[in-house]
Length: 400
Ligand code: PLP
Image (cartoon, rainbow, N blue to C red; front, side):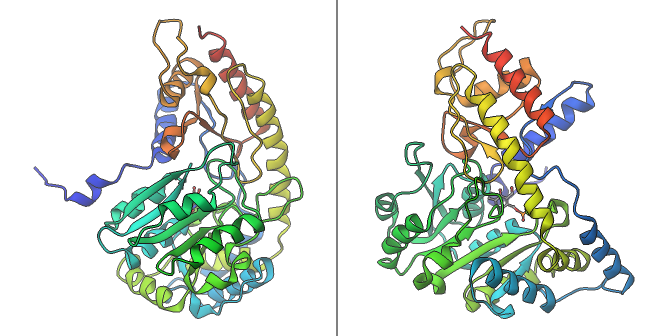
């Protein structure tokens, strides 16, 4: 038999990808499943972006590019970072990758020595701790409470930093909580970080456009310019332009880091798809109406999802300021009993019950490092949100 090495054994398969696979399997078996696990926009990639991809193919852009991406796309990313985030980078400080996730993995691989620590505030996007482990790092999870708006406090980061700390990972707007850090909150974190020069900051801003109620995102590098020489800004086109399948992300940071990441990428994927890079260039430099319309649609969906969830007895749903997930507190349902007499001991038990009895798929908070919560995606139609929340309410009403 084949003996598998320690690396794959040390990572958990992504729970959200597993949930999607389960929905697909159940549907293939003929079950009707309402899917509220989706981590991607349900919109079609804008036509103009598709046209740019087709034009690139016809023009012969079908070959390898530089390992850090085409100069024109890196320039477009630099222009975008200046225009929208007030950050000054040259194309040489920018690396294009096959998705933001690849760049996060590559940045960790380029910097972690065995035992180096990566501070990950919880609730977190499921991949950060596993990507740290995959590069022989040690994830240090810090729980951010609902009372603190699911945000890291300066005292918490001060307590978590050790001489082995290599990175702090920030994700605002946050997947799964929707939390958005204000400029004052980022500045306060920056004051602590300034005292610990060994700590790099990875700021994942992939949901930056999805902020509601007229608020705006502030980039960490803009809020704390003093730390720019140890900040890596991560972003991508997946969420903003409904381009998850095109696999293009970008990272901007210190040039030595960009160079180290580029060498690793040159020995993995060589370069991202040339056609997808042409599409991403059009996304970043073209008309931005799509993003505005998507934000408007998500705000309506958020309001509907939050009010339906919050109305269910035993569920308390805070209104997320950003991203496209609700993270309702289900403490009121833990310790309750199902009609067949089994106890609900965790949010994982609850999510499995909802799938089994209600035909509705949601993520459990356990997967995101903070319980007891559910993650309910509203990157889907109002109709799906309504039928999904009704199914949750129906199952909850059967509990003792
Ligand atoms: N960062 C966060 C916080 C995410 O939620 C996701 C996708 O779910 C990603 C990064 C991955 O983005 P990409 O498609 O660019 O790899």
